[in-house]
Length: 86
Image 1 (cartoon, rainbow, N blue to C red):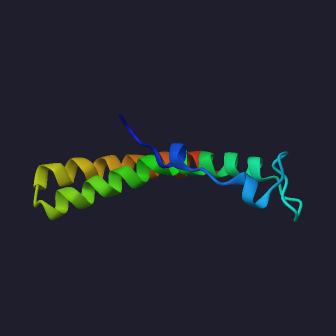
Image 2: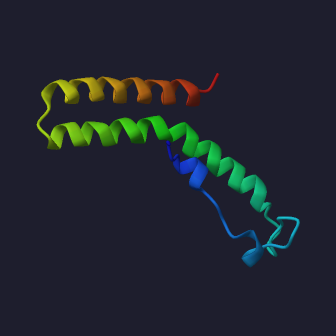
């Protein structure tokens, strides 16, 4: 079972917000949470590839390091492509 940071993101809305999801300052906490989940989901491939590259480096696995660095490069290129203004 894969546990994603974006799936684990959860805030206690009842502590700072009323039942509609609007806090006393007027912000829409549900919209904020949705935006943060999207951001985490977008960054997840980069973070995962970087973690795997670190593990391969620490284990002195040269082939694994080369493979994971390629995956990291591809993940960063995809992230930059998505964030590039059109």
